[in-house]
Image (cartoon, rainbow, N blue to C red; front, side, top):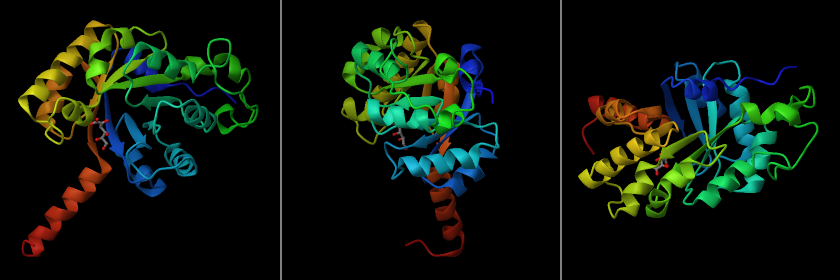
Length: 256
Ligand SMILES: O=C(O)C(=O)[C@@H](O)[C@@H](O)[C@H](O)CO
């Protein structure tokens, strides 16, 4: 059995735009449905979704037949959570709320076996093909992709130092938390938030790392792509299902 290639990581390294979608419904059925839509990547969110490890494994299995790449966001930048996700076969992590160079180094170290890092070793986990992938421990890091989220004032202050950390493969701008950090919680469209997002994307690009973001607003998404955003999530399962259901009901039912 061969170590699966991380096509998403290689696409970012080749500066190929990757269009993604956010999944918070925590269901293998909805993930399987979305994996067939044609997106390059799909976030399986564990931070802002009732999504636990066994459920994520089922979602990984549900999308394994599709080329859409799973990106898993653990609840926090946590050694144990990351170890368990890598053992489960996750190859791309989106680590929330990274604010300092040290936290970025920790995030990378949590994905590396000693001596490069502190990842705990298991011989027969799903990630190693239940032990069938030869030399997994030696080569697995080549196909791991570590994306970190910058979404606070301190993170913005340390942006270039975070981006420069070896093993950080991309920097994702968290628009919602950034808006809150700027005093505009819930108002991502606020001019100060948009200006900060645009400047942050430009700074990440200037730092030589792929920039990423999530926005369901097509105008914003195309603007961010113009600025060099390379992994761009353009919607979410909840947004599509929720707003679509609302609109359909409204066509047949009087407004409540
Ligand atoms: O906006 C943020 O901050 C984020 O990290 C988001 O991209 C996600 O939390 C998103 O809002 C989840 O639905």
